[in-house]
Image 1 (spheres, rainbow, N blue to C red):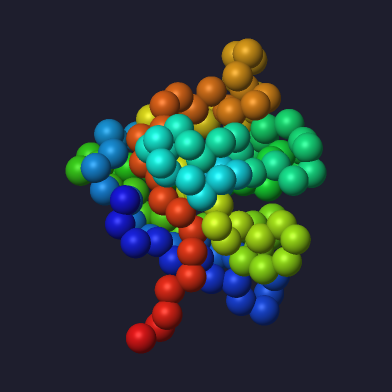
Image 2 (cartoon, rainbow, N blue to C red):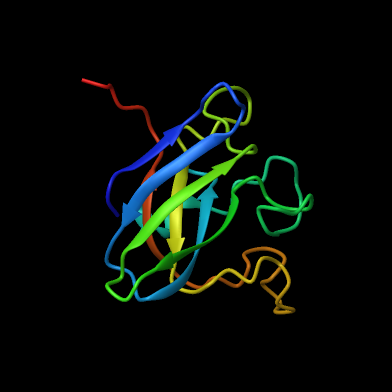
Length: 140
């Protein structure tokens, strides 16, 4: 994964921007996971960030994990251009995502609507193929 930028402007939305390379072409689940721990690779990042104890869903659904950010699309070269904004992933306060992990999955996220036994917990998005800890970086 290349560098990604999380910005928390005064609008209340956190903006996520960046490029992710090395993916297979197509849709990939994109989530915030609970733990910023990569000691065992992406497997150490835990479940989706879910402070309100809801079922998995689309970023547009009322019933969703805070960390459910839907899918990103990798082009024919395996590069995804990420441009999204969300109200449920603040960079400060009780439910801050700082110190948590961003994770890209091998498969598309069914947004909780696929009928698979994993749809309501993970979106049946498959293996974790890339991850990184969300932290602060100086502007210098």
